[in-house]
Length: 154
Image 1 (cartoon, helix red, strand yellow):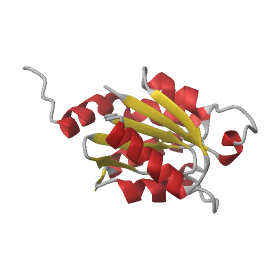
Image 2: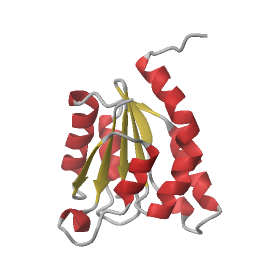
Image 3: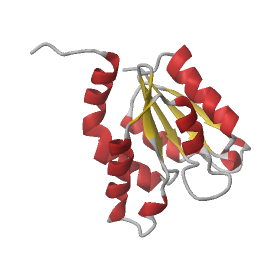
Image 4: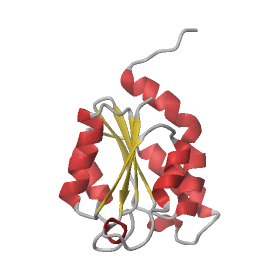
């Protein structure tokens, strides 16, 4: 499975601190492309399209930009590029965070399908990435199989 990770953080993209979220997502999906971009809606949309359409990644994961701040525009950018929603994935991620933080319901992360790619927004918190990733990881291979039309032999 080809996958890519996008860390959305204006401060990290400007060199103010290390990207802690991207490496956590990398553990979830090995052997993928990774990049760090600012919280700019047009840039996020462009990079999601690039990884899905140009690079042909079956799985595109983003981290960051899913909260309530005015600069948190990752969900809007994702909605602009996906063709079909995958709400159960985002719901499962929020549910997984519930026992760990009182702020679990503040995540606006979304997931959806663009062509043969599954795009999933993760929160920016490294701990939340691990919790959310553990909740959805078992379903991701089957989701990608369904999206790409691949059917295993029985």
